[in-house]
Length: 144
Image (cartoon, rainbow, N blue to C red; front, side):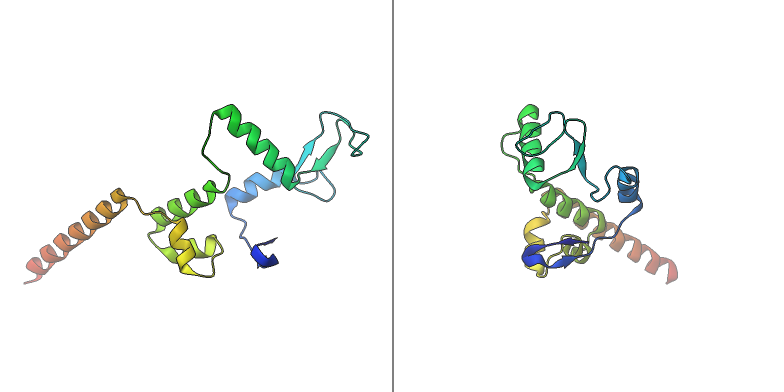
């Protein structure tokens, strides 16, 4: 469970893939799942080198900025992964409802802004429809 916008409770299913990622993290810290080992000590913030501490929002943000800079990414935000996730889920399922639920949107209009439809997706869907119509006509002729 996590909190979404407006501290609204969000329940996320733990899939086998997520379980595979999270399971090895058990027991590394008595309270938190996502942690890091401090490289340097700091009396000011009470950190001891070699000890494990929870990840903070600012810590993740700083790590993302360093990673992005080292990869040479200029115009890419962490939030862009959410758009990518929505788009890929829509392409996989062809259904906005599970995308809406996965992104925790209350309004389908929000989902439409996240799940991008590409020209090739439209062309592929039209071609699949044409092929299914051909199959239907062929079956009708066989029955007649």
